Length: 540
Image (cartoon, rainbow, N blue to C red; front, side, top):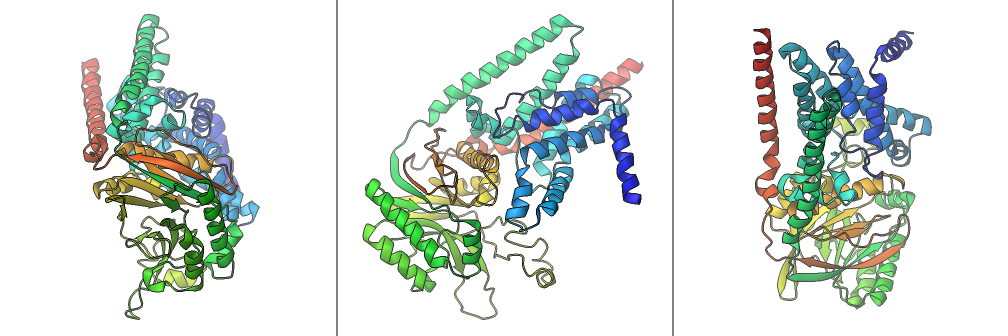
């Protein structure tokens, strides 16, 4: 009864919020402007929420709950696939999966209400003007979304790449997070223009300036990209997408059969692809495509022998996801299994040390806090417990008298800008991302994950190849050209001519641009100080 009363009171509070329709509207605008939707409301999606909380009578509490309604709505629209994943990956009943989705929507993006409430508190405390309050919300939002603990990082900057708006080319200067900051500042600007309706001339002048700046960013992005249209090396890579079902993947991981069937499906598709693409230089299979260990000290097992027997006649090397394990030199040493990426020749011999996945998926690949409190593994033995690698790292391949350094990303490691910056700093010439998105359904997540991963190629200006189990597999060049895309949930193979620049220079974003948060913090501080002085002058 206490819980029922609690939710009744909260529902009543929402009904009393005279700006709740605006908060709900913002949630809908944000949710329907993110991938896979066209970004139709990108530069004004947060404006209704922010305008509604600038009222003098708005309390911090009301501002928080308005922001919470916005984030709940946008999360439900944009990330509804969490419910499907909880059912498919977590094997939870649909009723519990829906509850998990609602909890995710309620808690995952609390930086939205936190930024809104904090800005209103500053407005009330420092007597900030409406204009200062709007830009304070935008800056707090962009700073908090960078540090807020979330399962995966997302923001509105990615929509520029998805919609092919050329402004995304400036990501090699400020990153896609920096582009997201610009989008949020534009939202504050639009909100300011809306509030200037009584001063029509002023509003129109600001609107003209905003439109001109947007056009300048689009045209400037197209021109800026021409700096990366030069290449002096190429490699023909063929991606194999075998569309292995989830149950087969689970059973193969647990050693309950299917390993041979999966291995032969990948080798069969590779041989068929080789007939179509005889100029292929290297094959690329997705995450854990080879369902067994592939370490040099473990060759000679049944499935590695099948691999060598089937791939050997083609004489082409292979990059593939597989499992890795340390040699048994000491029983006291950690014998963890790793989710790894291997570069092997046609016989399965390791051409370089494997890359072992570093950024593990919570509850899917490790149990949070179990590294510090091992007894938790005994309480929840059904949770996978993979070893953690020491990446980022690169793998070297001798090709045509030259050395190509492959920068490996396993699954959602491609979502972390800092991880890919580390690959570039270690000399990666080509990025390769291997992924299994079969747990996430079809409409939204595969496209969101795809473009969030491809974005890394623009930030560091290195080509990126993405090989997936069920799609979407593709490649993007350093100049932003996205190649053919595979269909979803179908067997498929495709050859890609990957052009790259040997010893390509580091981008400004890699060396300096990722420190833009410091500049944003200084701007926020300047707004607050200016607001305080203006408030004092008004009082005197």
